[in-house]
Length: 158
Ligand code: HEM
Image 1 (spheres, rainbow, N blue to C red):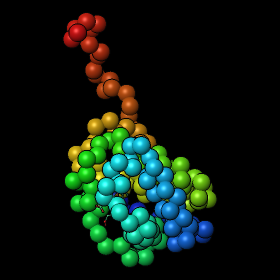
Image 2 (tube, protein in one colour):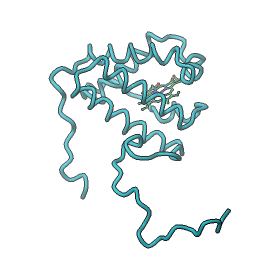
Image 3 (cartoon, rainbow, N blue to C red):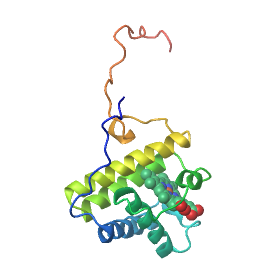
């Protein structure tokens, strides 16, 4: 019953649609010129203003519960030629921009949402290799190998 007491996150006092629109605006301005992400987005997004409006509606639906966004993000990403490194870069830019645009509490909330949604997408796309620790959005409980496993003898397996 892990989810028994789970409540939707409270909306921070300073977080509103205008702040999220600014976050989206600055974030996609970086994505647009990013050497790794730009080449994935630029052939597919010909109207960046429309994309920003769509993404603002997505994030206000996630964070402010506006319900304006209707779509299938996983279905949109599944055909993309992307791997783990794209998600890592996407999240790095998101963290950076959230820190620039939002207060600390709102930034932490928006970063947490993106980490969890990104994790879900990676699972849905079969891109779970190299997931570890905070980067996965899942807290790490045990990093040590099981106690009953002794290290292989040196040279045993080359
Ligand atoms: C946490 C990570 C991510 C989130 C939350 C996210 C979210 C979204 C959402 C909501 C859309 C709109 C889907 C729709 O049309 O309804 C979208 C579109 C798109 N995303 Fe992502 N995304 C993430 C990561 C990535 C990454 C890593 C890439 C690849 C570099 C990417 C590339 C794209 C592209 C190219 C589109 C436009 C697709 C199209 O309209 O054909 N996204 N994303």
